[in-house]
Amino acid sequence: MNWTAGPVPAFLLIGLWIGVLTGCDYGPVNILEREPLFQLQIGRMENQLDIITRNGVLPNMRTSVAMLDGFVYVGNGPANKVMEFTSYGDLIRLIYDPLQNPQPVSLGNRPVGDGNDTGRTRIATEYGFSQLGVITVDSRRYIFAEDRLPAERSVFDENLGVQLNRIVVRFDNTGTPLDYIGQEGIGGTPFPFIESIAVTVRDELAVIAKTMNARFVYLFSPDGDLMYTVRIGLDRIPVLDEDSTAIAVLDEVVSGVDQYRVYLKVSYYRASRDEETGKEYGIHLAESRIYWIDLNTGRYDGYFELPDTAEGESRFQYELLGVTAGEYVYLVSRIDGGRTRLLIMNDEGRVVRRRNIAISESDLILRSFNVNSSGVLTGLLGYTEHAEIVWWRADRLLPGGTNGS
Image (cartoon, rainbow, N blue to C red; front, side, top):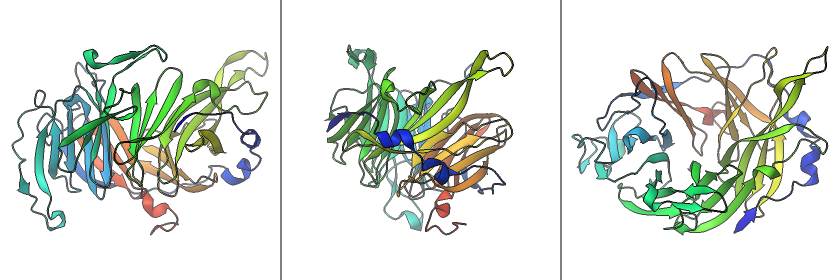
């Protein structure tokens, strides 16, 4: 089904109930303890992470992390490789470009010697990535990896005014490449720039693509068939009110997990005025909202406001990370050099939990998060001398969790 996100219903422009539900984000906030899993050395070997700076600058290539059933997946763009680790840091699967990586020495068709890994093998698979981007994984342990096509295989779209040069390659649970997914499904037209990819609880693949004027949402069945397409035009972003002069900025777009939705974080900015002269001297963040679009209709179906998170004169700018089963929304905001605020909200606009998480920023050069469907928050923290894989058991904070207080 193909849709363009339609007009905003009147009830979205009123939102009288929002302030009651969200409340304010003041008062002391507990710390959510970090659980370290393992470290990775920096380098080019099969079990190392290439985030080596060139002339003091990190390569403009994406490195992402995903987690499923305790296994950690790292897509390392600078090295054009995807790695799968146990929670203890043992490398058990590698998909790598042989032109950019040395021949693996620790991988082969050998059983993993861990009773919890019965039947799993250590496998290395060669695949000629052009430029690896973001990754995700489904319950079948199929890996989905964004790849950028070389110039001779890209297509220029005159209507969009962009090069279509991104695809999503599918690998089965042994690392064997199956096919690639484009806009129409398997073997389809390449996408424009891919912002993110994710899977639902039904193993459907969601692709969020981006142009200068719009975001595009594609949802594919587990077999790779196109189910929904929605265009979110930047000129159709909801306004604060009918007479508002606030500037709306679409920050992030993420897929729903168990409902056919896509979530948008929108920030609204107003002009700042000098109280004495009345002159404008800049803009300030006035409000942020989370909207969602029903993929069945392609229309905005609801929203809630993010709580007023001012501390003193400063307002947090939250980043929308992802959504869990039950449609709980995860957001993070950097507070200072050592603290990050985690905010979990439901789709009624209620703050379920607020927690602070500690992330050392000394020599930090890379930070990548992943929220899985059960609510575990996994982090890949890259430093100049090593990288850390950690997680925060935020799933225990959700209703029904083991530590919901």
